[in-house]
Image (cartoon, rainbow, N blue to C red):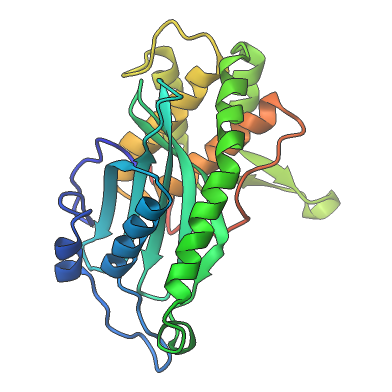
Length: 286
């Protein structure tokens, strides 16, 4: 998600953290005999209440609602004076068209360059929109929201550790080269079945945008010679460019890029969150 998510034809990007606006524009039409869409407005109300109960102050709230009313994403910073350059963020995505279940996500929001990077998707928080889940278990949404915040509190130190590692690692040509190769794609298979598979989330135009942003940062500190500069360039393109066309894909791309960079500088790196299905309808070029 981006603090400057620009207008586009497919997504509402204003007033989309207002419960009344969401209620007025979300589509809760069942898509089958057992499909019961979960209201994003209801989830957001419960989400905020749970944060308050935990003593977490949500600030800089951002959202995106598909204009057809079927898909919603929300992300907010958790106020914390311990980190002057960035904040940790928590949120969720909810699709009422049966494409993806309601699930939570955690990440970072970097003040210095206004980037939002999703570091993890919380798979145990997933909730299918079915009669059994929604109408027969009224506390199910609450339990899934609890899971999101539990994972946020568990993962926050690890997210801080990732940022610290990037800030303390010098950015070299070798690291940039490995990053470019990873974004182009990879060889998979053996022998006759071996083939080159392009990265499903990042197209060639997006890669060129990242490299251009690395050379001439739009918002990030121009004298930063650490890997954190590469991270900021990558997340700037996803959250300020890709998000204009497809916020959902931009979210997944920011997580993938974060994990690629961390894997390059730390061979023992294990991604946060859970393996999830990627929502890729087409590669969005910036």
